[in-house]
Amino acid sequence: MIGSDGQIGGAPTLEYASEVGGLLDDGLLLANSGGTILAVNTAAVRLLGESVVGKNLAEVVEYDEAIEKQKRLANNGIDKEFLFQPKSTVRREFKVRIKQLENGLVLVLVMDMTLQRNLEKVRRDFVANVSHELRSPLTSLAGFIETILNNEIQDHETLIRFLKIMDEEAKRMARLIDDLLSLSRVEVDEHIVPSEIVPLLEVIRSVIHSLEDRAKRRNMRIDFLDNRPTSSANLYMYGYADEINEVFHNLIDNAIKYGFEKTSIIVHVNAQQDDHVIISVSNFGDQIAEKHLSRLTERFYRVDKARSRQIGGTGLGLAIVKHIVNRHRGLLSVKSLSEGKTTFTVELPIINGSERKNASKRRNVSS
Ligand SMILES: Nc1ncnc2c1ncn2[C@@H]1O[C@H](COP(=O)(O)OP(=O)(O)OP(=O)(O)O)[C@@H](O)[C@H]1O
Ligand SMILES: [Mg+2]
Image (cartoon, rainbow, N blue to C red):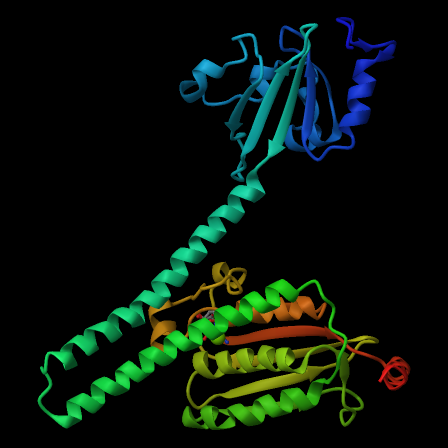
C-alpha cells in the first residue's frame, strides 16, 4: 500500500519505484496529483531526456490534444492510454499508459513503439514490393498468352519471338522466387555460426571460372590478384561453401552487369591479418552516388530501377550477400570513387594453421 507521503509500508516509494523501474526497458515515471514528476527510471531518462523530474506530465508526454482530448490527464488521469510522437529529428513513437493510484500519485509507463512500427512498415513494403515484382512479368505473360490464344499471330517468326519473351519473363519470376527463398533461408539461419570448413580461395576461383564467359560477352576480363606474402597458400574458414559461393557470385555478377564494357574486374585478396582476410571486388562504371551506398543492401533497392530491371536484376542480390556475410561473422562495405571505380569489400574470419589441425582432428574423432 502506497501512502500519500510516497511511502510503501515504511519504504520510500521513490526509491522503490526507481529500483523496480531499473529492471524495465520501458520508461516509468511517478508524479504527484498535480502532475509534477517526482521520479523516473533510467529507461525514462533514455526516452524522454535528463531533465524531466520537476516538470509537468502534460508537458513531457504531450500528445495531440485535438485527437485525444477526451483522454487528457486533466480528466483525473485514470487508466489512460495514448500514442505520442516526441518532437525530434528522428521519427519516434511512444505508447503512454497512465494509472492514477489511490493516494493521488500518478504512475506513467512509456513504451517505445518505434522499432515495432518500423518493422511493420518494412513488412508492408516487402509484401508490396514482392507483389509488384511478380505482377509485372505475370501481366506480360498473360498478355502474350491472350494474343496467341486469340490467333492474332500470323507468322511463325513472331510466335517464336513472343515465346522467347515469355520464356524470359517466366525465368525472371523463377529467379525472384529463388532469391526470396534464399534470402529467407539465410535470414532464419543467421544466428547459427557455420561449422564446416571451406577452402575460401578455391571457392572464389571456381566462381570466377563460372562467370568468365559472361564477362567475355561484355568484352570484360576478370583479374585475380593475391597480395598476400604467401600467396600460394590456400585460406580456410568456417562456413558453408554454397553460401560463400553465392556471396562472390553476386558481387562479381554485379561487377559484370554494372561495369562498363571492355573494362576489367579485379578480385583482390588483400593482406591477411592474424585471423581475417579482406577480399575486394572492383569494377569500372558509373559512380554510385553517396546517398545510395548505405541502402544498397536493402531488399529490392536499385539505384536505377529501370536499368537494373532491364538487365534482369531484382535487387535482392546484395541483401542476400549481407546476410550471408553477417552469418559468417564478416563485414561488408562499399566504396565508389568519382572516376567510377566501385569496390565491394568483404572481410572474413579465417582459421589459422593450428586451429585447422585441431578442427580436422575433432572431425576425425567425431566421424
Ligand atoms: N558493382 C556495382 N556497380 C554499380 N552499381 C551497383 C554495383 N553493384 C550493385 N549496384 C547497384 O546496387 C543495386 C542493388 O544490387 P543487387 O545485387 O542487390 O540487385 P540487382 O543486381 O539489381 O539484382 P539481383 O542481384 O537480385 O539480380 C543494383 O541494382 C545497382 O543499382
Ligand atoms: Mg545483383
